[in-house]
Image (tube, rainbow, N blue to C red; front, side):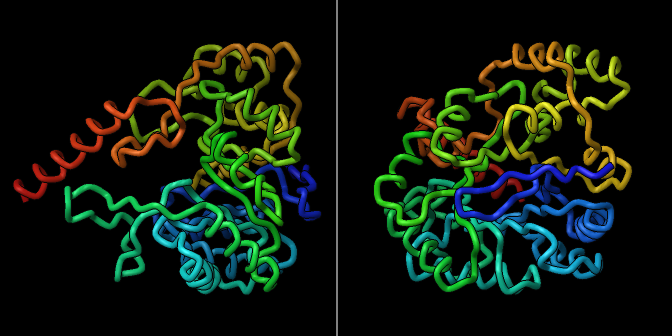
Length: 328
């Protein structure tokens, strides 16, 4: 039952390799999920300000009765608070909501900055010039150095990044006093990113995989439904989700399965070893298929699109929002 495997980060702290993800977990569900997970043996909870459920995550932590020093807690800095003077404010709100005085890990959620709105809980401020999301330029060095200062204050133990490419990570390594400990990225059999994984291992930066079964918000084929995965799962008397979680661990990443269903939370935490043949079959499924690409922002986050495409995607999103407003 217990998945006690952990990885020692470059900061010297250890992170359990299987954590409970809380993205898209509803406010009325996530507290119970976190409470159950911690009581069941999970020792790693992954949260974020933009999920708008950190107070409920905190309630679940409190209800579990598990002492704070016995589990690993992650949160993420949202795009509206990248300015040096805004980072601590964002952190303090997460600490308050989560009911703790420190985080084990704090990540820059995206390598994209938004204008800070007057309402601190507004996540996607609108640019009055074109009615798209208000993207601004904040040097990554400014944000990172503010994160480093919070480590020195004792409010954070380790710092890292999320959705960063190798090139973006190298920008930080060029000036960082404290090296990123983790890069949390979309990773599953359809998007394996072997180059980024291998390079990150060389740099002693742990890759943590989100959406390990594929993403369920775009109605596109997912790895969890792949016939090969289903066949492997049946042969091992496991669920497809269990197979994908263990594959992620065996390739040297931490992984964040998400569920609010107690039986699935428990299943996702089981330890077993994938046979090498099964592991290799899953490795062969890579399609370089990324689900989570915020093209509506008009920003080339992953270096995979042309400026023309991104401009069109931004304009299409703006047009759709105008249609929605007109119909309201």
